[in-house]
Amino acid sequence: MKMTKKINNLIAEISNILGISATGRMILNSLVKTKKKLSVSEITAKIERSERSVRAQLKNLTGLGLVKREIIITKKGRLAYQYFVPRVEGLVKSVKKEMARRLRSLETDMKGLRER
Image 1 (cartoon, rainbow, N blue to C red):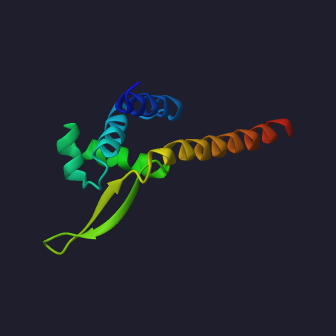
Image 2: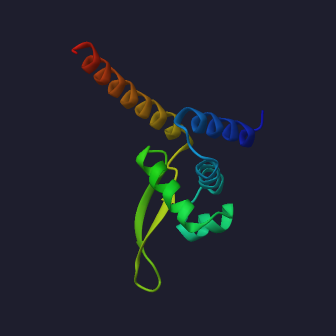
């Protein structure tokens, strides 16, 4: 199986497990394939989705730990973020961490139900 297909399958599986939208999946694919840091406008142009949708999905993806961001200063002197996936291997690690967090939350909820 080609590497691109493996990466696509990995991202699709991660998206299914974590409930990531089609736009979020497109963002992950774009960041992994370009292997560089991209601004919101660059991501928007690549995946042809609205800026609002891209920003919402980036917030979700960074919250899950799948995407990282760094602050840069633009040519006009403004602050902006650039987004990236540090390593493809890190995606699986982030999924494990999120699943462990969700399981702990479920266990806490179950304890609350048993005590009633």
